[in-house]
Length: 186
Image (tube, rainbow, N blue to C red; front, side, top):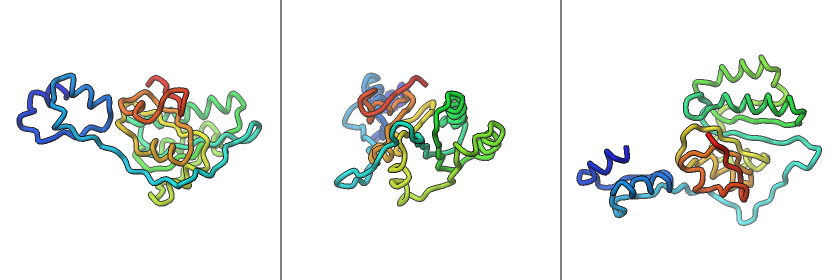
């Protein structure tokens, strides 16, 4: 794509980039900076973050909000994580907010592996409720194979949830690994 955009630059008024990595890739290919516009999410914040985190010995609260799909979002890996945590004896809950073409399969897998007490499917949450969803989570998970600057990750961080995310093109725009979250290989 970067080569095509650079070759067609004369016909392009401007290009919207969704991550710093994508922007820098375009610039390296010779695309002019004056034709690049950055997409930045506007997330509402309270003046003071008031929330609590799970204490040692209490249930670890995990969350995912986004499309419930196998392609790109890799929601199947959320179940793999859940199985591993259960096998390790970690007390946790994982709430999955969203809808998508993989929802029925996830529901069946949860039942098959007897994860009904740990993994909850909440369906679609309205935009005005997403901050409350994240305020009661310790960790925000994302297993995406490719992702720009994720609005869900930004919303989670704004509410104080610690992101554990894959190293996609937009991951490092918000997260400094081991400082304000954790980035793992795709």
